[in-house]
Length: 210
Image (cartoon, rainbow, N blue to C red; front, side):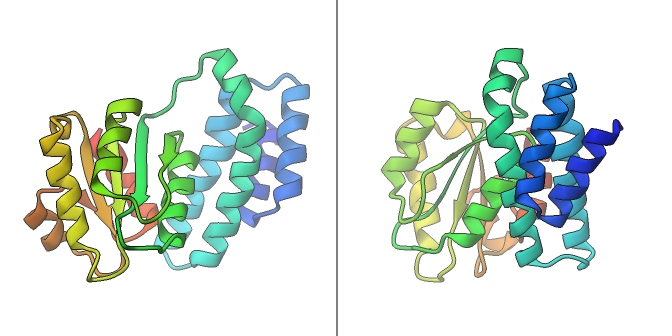
C-alpha cells in the first residue's frame, strides 16, 4: 500500500477526521487513483475497525468515531468516484421502522455499509411500511435494512415485509433486520432474509446476501 494511503488508513482507524480529509486530498493530488483510495484506505480501514469490534478491541464509540472520519473522506471522494465510474458494491435502503425513533444503531449500520463501498439511502426513523415500499420502487436497491430497538415496534418489521409483498417488490430485494430485541428466530418467523446482531456483522451479512 502506498504510504499516503497507509496514512489515511491509520487516520480512519484512529478517528482523526481532519487528518483523513487532508490525507484524501493529498493522495488525490499525488495522483493516487480514486478507486485505490476508496478500496485500500477507506474500505480497508473500516474492515479493520469491524474486525477489532468483533474481537472487542473496539466498542461502539470507537467504531462511530472511525466511521465519521471515513465518511468525511468519502464525501471528498464521491464526485470523483462517479466521474471515474467506480461502481458501488451494491445499493441498500435502511431505516428504523414506524413508531421507533432510535437512530444510532441504524446510522452506524449505514456508515459501516458506506465504509464497505455500498451506496446507502437512509430513510431515517419512524419509517412507515409504505415508505419502504416506495423507496424500493424509486431507488431499486438490492438490499433493505430494517432496524427496531423496541419490542413494541418489532411487529412493524413484519408489516413492512407485508407491504413490500403487497406492492409486488418483495422478490426484488433481500431484507435484513436488526436491533436490540430482534433475534435470528424472529427474523425467520417474519420471513426476512437475514439478521445481524451489530453493524459490523450487518456488512458481512449484506455481502453474503448479494
